[in-house]
Amino acid sequence: MLDRATAPIIKDPIHFNFELPAINTHALSNDVPLYWLNAGVLDVVEINWIFDAGIWQEPHQGVANASAALLKNGTLSKTAKQINEDLELYGASLKIGASNDYASITLHCLVKHLATILPTIASILFEASFPEEEIEIFKKNALQRLAINLKQCEFVANQKIDAHVFGAQHPYGRYTTSASLEALSSDMLRNFHKAAYQMNTCKIFMAGKVGAQEIDLINRYFGATTLATTAKNVNNEFTISSDAPFKSYIENDANAVQGAIRIARTIPNRHHPDFAPLVVLNTLFGGYFGSRLMSNIREDKGYTYGIYSSQSSYIHSGMLCIQTEVGRDVLQYAVDEIYKEMDLLLQESIEEEELLLVKNYLLGSILGDLDGPFSILQRWRSLILNGLDQQTFQKNINTYKNITAIELQQLAKKYYNATDFFEIQVV
Image (tube, rainbow, N blue to C red; front, side, top):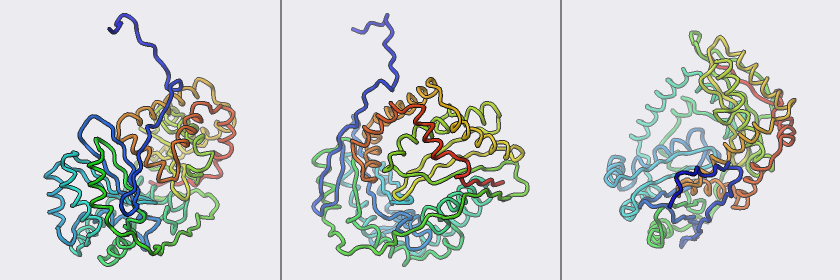
């Protein structure tokens, strides 16, 4: 019986033992890898199909995102309306999107409906037809959205900072233009789909109440396709911008009362030994609501509702970006305070109490990620797509627990010098 008269012992996350549940691996009949977890109490399943069909692989600007957006808008046997009705009839959710490195198809549904829904997913992947009328609707809507978004300072700032850091012609720096949208054609999307959505580049991830029957279903619909025997003609040689970091001021709207700030630089990706330590340092600097940037620029100065520093890892590089929106009249004051906080990281050692708070926040967030099959699958997916394993997870946990203030100060001197950052102000 519980002793309700005595409060339970409170333990900080830093004292917990962290264990990432193992994932099962199964090769389909055509050797496509299936990574799966049988976990959870609800009769639901999540399935991800990941293809090398991101912006990195696209031969023409905008093709990767357009292909992903239009993948379920018509096949050789079904219209977009019929596909959506098939999914809605069984309460299924299907999301498709392209990122810098990959295209991802994500299905959520009840396990009992999986056998009925998978043929529709297979049709989308293998028989997408990209009808001209659907492409014209997509282009019209995308052009309207772009025209509206280009009036917003934060949208323009996000475009320009990527282009500055990586270069406007680099896949990580390219952004959508009206010209690239106008140039899209049905043949262009079909050719990209045929070249990039190949099962020989596919990885499938599945989690929920799944077992042998669900694995057999995946194999029936996605294991029979013959893998491509010829290599794709993809240009994997891109040079990151060689420009020295510079500052840019853009007046996007003469009457604007608010401005966007983006301050960014390249950093190593997950394979570099500095990446995990940088996670701790970035969290302290601007990675959570109690960060130094938030305490100074929101709580003390009142310049903004929120300011964050994000750490992104891609297959071929990474980026550290500080972002916020503030009143036009305090734009430069906010920028000055950001650099002031950077300099403090270089000049002053972090107090142990603050460091412990950051470690507990970071580790507590990871504990939340390990609660539930879909969250666990997401963490495994990130590891596998980056060529990492369970040992990397444990190594990172040890770094988060044991890194010292001295090590973080040395890291700051390496990555937080103001002269190494590109800066953009857009009003």
